[in-house]
Each structure stands twice: as C-alpha cells, then as structure tokens.
Image 1 (cartoon, rainbow, N blue to C red):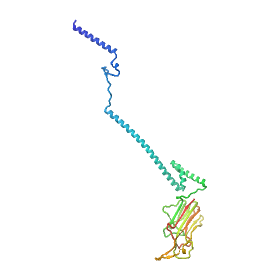
Image 2: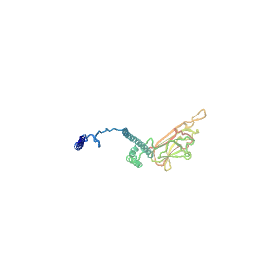
Image 3: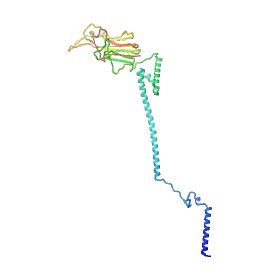
Image 4: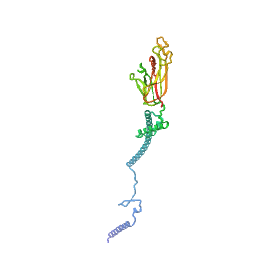
Length: 332
C-alpha cells in the first residue's frame, strides 16, 4: 500500500469526517446569532453585524429647522391675530357708544324741533329707542310721543308747554327805511336774519313794502306781548295833536273786530315840539322810548299789530333795532 496513498486516504477520510462533524455541530449547537441576540447576523456569512448609529444629513437638518421656524411663525401670527381681535372689539365698542350718543342727540333735536317738547321728557322717553337702534325706530318714536302726551294729561289734564330758551317766540326789529308803516298806520318790521317763525306763529307781510306787518296766532294759549317805539318829536311845531301820540298794540279777533291791548302816552315837553334850534338851524326834539308789555290768552287765527294813534302821523318815530321792536312769546 502506497504510504502516500494511505496517507491521502486517511486525509480524505479525515476531511469527510471533519465535514460531517461540522454539519452536526451546525445542526445541534446554538448559532452565534442566537447566543448574541443583540447582534445582527449577516444572512449569508452568518457573521455578526453591529448596528450603525443613525445620523441626520444636512438636508434633513435644514428641513427640520424650516419646520421649527414655520411653527414659531404660526405661533407669533396667532398671538398677533388674537391681540388684534381684542383691539378691534374695543374699538368697535367705543365707536358704537359714540354712534349711540350721536343718534340720541340727533333724535332729540328732531323731536324738540318738530313737536316742541321738553328735552328732559324727550330724553327719558327715547332712551329705549336709542339703545335698540332697530329698524322700527319711527314706530317707537311715535309711541314715545304718545307716552309723553299721556303723562302730561295725567299730570295737568291739558298739555302744557313750559317756557324754555328755545321756546316759541318771534322778535321783530325796527325797519331801516323811509317806509316804516303801511296804509293802515301799522308799523312794519324786519325779521332777524337768523330767526324763523315757529309753527305756532305766522308772520303776515305787507304786500307793498314786503316787511312784516302782523303776527298771526296759530295755536291757542297764553302769550307774552311786548313792543317799544322811540318817539322823536314832531315834524312841525303844532299844538293840535293829542297827548297819546306814541303807539298801541291791537288785537284783531276772528270776528274781525279790533281791541286795543296796550297803549302808551306821550310825555315829552310841549307834545314833542322843538325846544332848541342849534347853530346850524336844526330843531332839536326830545326823544323817548315807550315800552308796552302784557300777558294775554289768544286763540287760533287772531292777529297782533302795532300802530300809532289816530291823528299822530306828524310825529317822528325812530326805528333803530335797539330802540324799536315788537315780539310775541308763547307761555303755555
């Protein structure tokens, strides 16, 4: 037997035995990946593999940074919007309060001007109307007016209209013109530029001069009547005039008959004749103002006028606004 052959045979036998032993060990002994469960085994080489530590790439870091910045911006924006909403609510409330005050003032002005009512009563009656500011404001205004009328009837039986600074009155001033009276001997007057007659009073104008000649009553009630004329002597020194050549306030009733309400008397020396002639040859006359005033009850369509006494047209009447005037005021 060839020793080399036997040797090789032994070696081959040994290799076969070794292979069988390896297969047996692989089948019966625990594998390395089972002994080390935390290690990762390569599926082909069965060699343990260590887990790699995960790291973030620059692109991933940039994306995360952008997300964080976006979240921060969203938070800041939400906070700003919340603050603005609160500010908007406060501004809206303040504007609503101011608008309510303006509406109340406007409604009060309209009601006082149209119905001539007491401001305190109007304000108290219109308080729910101003607070609601609804579409049915006109209906509520009408109801408030009715409530005021009912309260007045309960208190005094009749509607009363107390005197107020913005009450019912008209004040006429002397006319700066050569025509100071009409064909009926009535003094004519000018209305003040800023004065407009209220509905309770009507101004009757002279068709010739266009000035106011009479005041016509349009509402029943008590009225204060006053007038004043400045008398500056005679045109000629005549002694035949009566001693009442000043002026008088006359009432014309609905029956078209006249009644003298007020009359003044002339108290000038020598009935207004000249008492001196100056160096220029001008005659000097005394000047006096005659004031009349009284309270009377009138009804609708009665008329008031001021004229001079009969037979006294020869006297000088100074119609300056501060000296001569005529007025009527409603008291109730």
